[in-house]
View 1 (cartoon, one colour):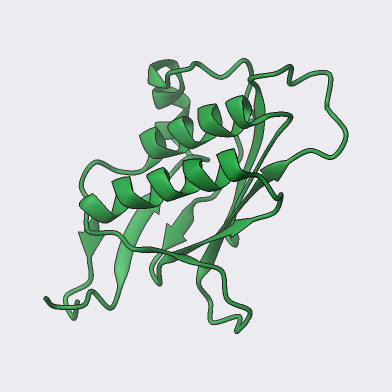
View 2: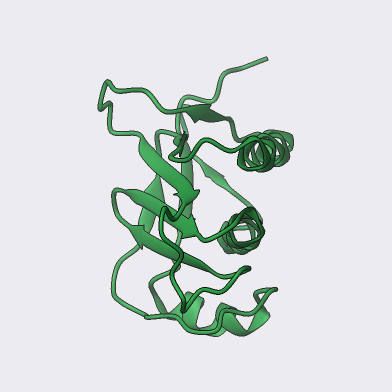
Length: 144
């Protein structure tokens, strides 16, 4: 099996397409803030679990396996700073009243994604939203 050396996934969450897509996301976001920019994932996406939780680990394993079926390998985080974007996900140490039990706070920046919630119900919803924001068809560089 040929190793894909470069995956180009354009997640244009912070551009016009996100504004149109937000009404199609299930569960629908209660609120969002639109800003300029995009997250380009061209060297993979590493996962970093910020909270010790068996349920959160199960969610990340499922998320990883679903992406693997699409030909996208998500790895555990490394500390080499190789330019790989990171999805950091965890549970708030102190519950945020505005999120409730099933809400989440997701920040998408050029460096990666931060997803935090009060409970694993919130992280589950956040991961479902994130899956919907990835392009249906990925773009692969000519050399990979």
